[in-house]
Image 1 (cartoon, rainbow, N blue to C red):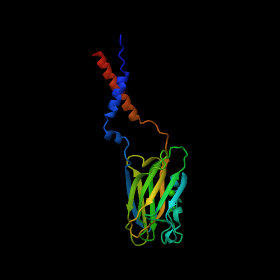
Image 2 (image 1 turned 180 degrees about the horizontal axis):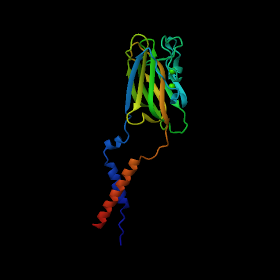
Image 3 (image 1 turned 45 degrees about the vertical axis):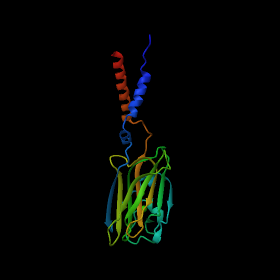
Length: 242
Ligand SMILES: [Ca+2]
Ligand SMILES: [Ca+2]
């Protein structure tokens, strides 16, 4: 007596069912990061900046391209020293990293935990004694799994219009309904041209987040697969009975 064994047929059916899933549905499981960008500016009053963000607590290395010390500004140290700095004359050692389209700042976090960091927010600040307080940059990140592949997170262009006295600006990036980015090992700022008065005087870059946990299978994907197998098995049973 020939025993009918449905297992190979089941597997083929399952593969066919998976292949039939529309491409849009598969793409939807890996959404592109949606970023909310907020901007603010104020005259003659600085901002409170953080000293406990990832660029101060979990930075391993940083690298820079460009002259960040125009007009005597103190340069790249200003990005992550937890200091906003005083109002008034920003040159001659004042708290600023001057930057425009020929400037890049790259920050790589430590590898404690081995999975990178999940970012919750990035806040950036610029200020000058008039008119260099805007911000323009593209911020990208690379993950722990692909540390040399940069993914663009957001393009910022905030031509702060406060004129007269001291210009101060704040730009805030947050994730729309979740993390800003996950498993991040490196964050890169590529500063842009186009602001009035050319370069801007950046006062601080605050990057917030927590160490990422080891990856686990997506529960929804496992559930879908099990449900699909159950359906096919039930169909096979009905066919055998008929
Ligand atoms: Ca600073
Ligand atoms: Ca900081």
